[in-house]
Structure formats: C-alpha cells, structure tokens
Length: 192
Length: 192
Image 1 (cartoon, rainbow over the protein chains, first blue to last red):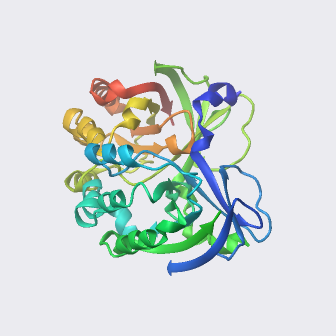
Image 2: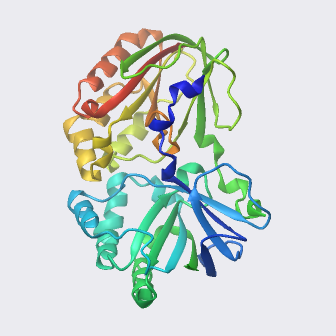
Image 3: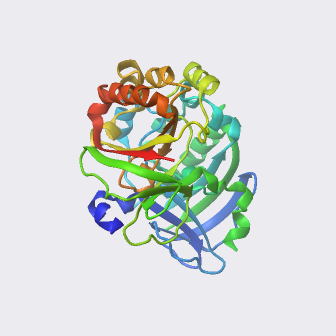
C-alpha cells in the first residue's frame, strides 16, 4: 500500500551507485593505497552499478554513494563547470581513479560559510578542478548520510596521455587547507 | 570480510530515523492534510524509531530521514540556534507536527549562493525560526538523497499552550519566497 504513495517515477534510483570491489567488474584494479588512515582490502576488479541491496560475495567490499546538488559552488562557478565539464565513459578515458575520502568531526561542525571559505577562498577547490577540465573528468558521490565508512567517493576518468596531468591535480588538492580536515583517504587506480 | 573494513563504531545508525504511520506508535495522529500536492494515507498512529530495513505492515507507510550538517546557516546564526534550541521529548511538549516537504527541480538546480539568498536574505527562514524558540522545538530530517517521496521531514514539538504560536510560525514560513519552490507538503498533526 505504501508503494501506491511512492510511485517509481518519482524515484530516480540511477542517482545511487554501488562501487563494488571484488572478483569482477568493468574496471581492473591497478593499485589500492592508503593516503590517510586505514586502506581498503585489495581486490582485482571494480564494478560500478546502480545501487542495490544485494548481498556481497565473499572477498568483496562495496561503497555506496549518491549524486546530489552542489554544496559549495556559486552561480558563476557552477556555470563554468557546466560549460566545460567532461562526461564519463569517453572511449579514450581508459584510466580512472576512485578516491574515497572522509573529513573529520571538526569539518562537519563548521557552519556553511566557514566550510565554503576553506573550500574555495582558502583551498580554491573548484578553481583548481576547472584548470584540469575537460581532460580530467570528475564526479562526486556523497555517502556520509548513508552512514558509510567514507563521506565522499571521488571519481576521475582520463586518457593515458593525461596521467601526469592527473597526478598534478591530486597533488595540488592534497596540499590545500581543506585537506587538513581529511581523516581518511584511499587512492584506488583503475584501468578499463 | 567487508564488515571488518566498516567497523560499527564508525557508523552512527541513530542518525537515521523511520517515521512510520500505521496501527501503533507513541504519537496519536490528529489529522493528515495535504497543503500542496498529494496527501498521505490516513493512519491512526505514528511511530518514530531508528532507521531499519524491516518490512512494513499492511496499511502502513514509512518515511525515512537523516540528521545532517546545517546546509545554509552561517556561523552567527548557528551559534544563536545552539544557544536557544529546545530538545525533543520535553514532558510538556505533548503536541507535535510532522510536515514532509518536497522542493521543485528549479530549487535543486540553483547554486548554493542562490539557494542561500532565497532561504535567508529573502525568506528569513532561520531568523523566523529563532523567534519561536525555545517554545517550538524543531528538527529537520533530510530524505531527498534516499530517493524518498519527500526532500525533508520537518518535525515540531510544543506544549498545548503554544498551539497558536506554532500556527503563526507555519503560516509565516508558508508565505515566504522559499515556499514558492515547495511542490509537495503534507501537514500531519500529532498528540502524545
């Protein structure tokens, strides 16, 4: 009966994704390295698929994340992002990185204006990201509100020719003031 | 195996709640009225409990919401809120209202600064709410990112002596510019 009140067409399940590390998947895992805090178990493949409740195979892990509205970008930044953003799944973009991140309690206790100041005024998060578009396609998935072990799943896709360019982007972000609030980060590199 | 990577102490399930309308619960339903859009099925009781995956009894509905960080409040506003906010469960607060709300696609397409301007500069959402504290205790639960039929579950508790004061608060909020973006709202009144 509840279902009649929750028609499926109101519900866009494609906005929730499972990133499943295990024995199969469209991405081959090249490396899994802890950057800050505990790592994740080494698995040979990563599968990215619409969110489900299905049980995990032995030796697998799953991280659930959802797409959401932008939390910090202002109008001008958003318009720049929309103008030059690159889509996922480009044939030449055979390299990917999944970098799950958690921020500490201090970060989450900050007010919106305090977080915005650190994110952009101090750390230039969007400004830096824009410099690497369109070669480095990025997507952010939220998971903190699902009580997951990470707050965010950051996803990047790029062509092998842009591998050094990607390392530069990651290196710059990790040197920002914002990263001082990161308490767990795992860097997972993938190949199609 | 995945569990060893997701220790329970990292996970605070108490931040997710189910608001279950049905045959039993700690709150007696006084009325369920649509304000904007489709209503919810009439049920005699409402039960508020930590989030679960358990199956619903026939003739019941359930709305899942999570507590999260403040999305618009700035430092000064947050400090005022923390200074005078009232807790839930006060013995004298035997009246409650559950008002699930959804905002339209136009709202969610706005950038953070545009939403903030409408929320506070234009609509004085926090400023109005502060005027009614501590008599009217308020809690906001998010659900949009769970693909629920509503974006927010707003919850209010107050003493019968403050019933008119509560009507005034709801009436003022519904007249704001922000409410022009509300595409679904159901007003559920409860008694302990």
